[in-house]
Length: 74
Image (cartoon, rainbow, N blue to C red):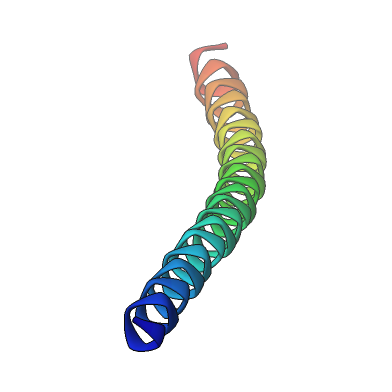
């Protein structure tokens, strides 16, 4: 009878350990997802900034070329 009680107690301990490990895993996973999302968001913001800079530079080049073209028309 003592062996059965000991086994039940060990099973309960193991189930509790599994539940705790599952909760710890969920917390780690959520933290990783949040960190990855924030990194992705920051990367996207930098990329959009770079695109805006390139667009402005391209627009300036177009304006310079238009000015040169108009100077030939005169």
